[in-house]
Length: 403
Image (tube, rainbow, N blue to C red; front, side, top):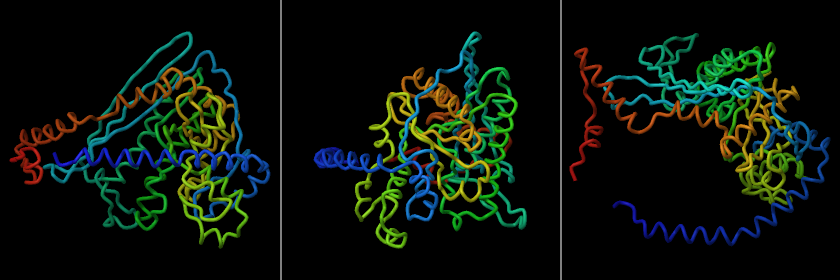
């Protein structure tokens, strides 16, 4: 055995003991932080976060109040939830053929007088050059391989595109919750203007915006609300909004003494190491949502136009979830309240997690045995056509260890 579990367990016990010793201090700091935040007026919070994007940490624009809570409304008698999730097998240089597999799965669940459930899954193999590379329209010789993080971003876009198709097929006379797992923010592009060339960014962002606009257009003729659900979020954006509102120092001093995770000056030091979910675990009742915030992530702020991303936190009973919505949902109180109500209903039906996302994941996931079988199927298909099926010696050695 290569890992000494005895030494590892000893170190884990020591780490847990030290974390336990800090628990009382964390609780006191969080209580002090909440007390200070509660004295910030809504008008002051909106004004102070208006230029929050200039800070050396990610803080959102406060829309309603720094801290607020809203009770859910009863769900309608009949409604639909449509959800899509995705999984993929990346391009593997050890395979005899360059290709990737994208599997989109989802479901449409109907509640009310005519309950129904429809599950679907559709794999798509990409092997043509136009699928494996993104080309610069201004210079076709300039390319970016669709693999790794780029493939992950494209999968996110495909999920939303497929979701729009599914919503179009839903009953037009029922309210519809369009739901995706994860974020509407393309975090993989944040701060990466130097990492990804402009044509790569625009290709991915334009695809996302097109899907969002298609869903928005559907909402004009039927009741459609869109949301992205983030389970166990690790964001500290609202914590950083509190930092922004409490900070008495000028921007120059803030930039030299503060970072995204840590604040060195008082009174901001109380915010260090906290996550938003810890804050709302103390302030939200089960079923209630927080106030609304607009993210200041550079990608939506600079590229999303009228599809800006807003978010709130929802106490689902079992966890604090982050729910993201596009601007057209955030600006419509009825759609916002409908999304809150239906997501909560989904969590209650799914023992703390939305049923539709869970079912979509089951339809989309590609498990370990299926990934290994895919490699074998690639080789078999090539062999039937008399094509070479070589692989690397490294890959062969993994399959046949000799010690």
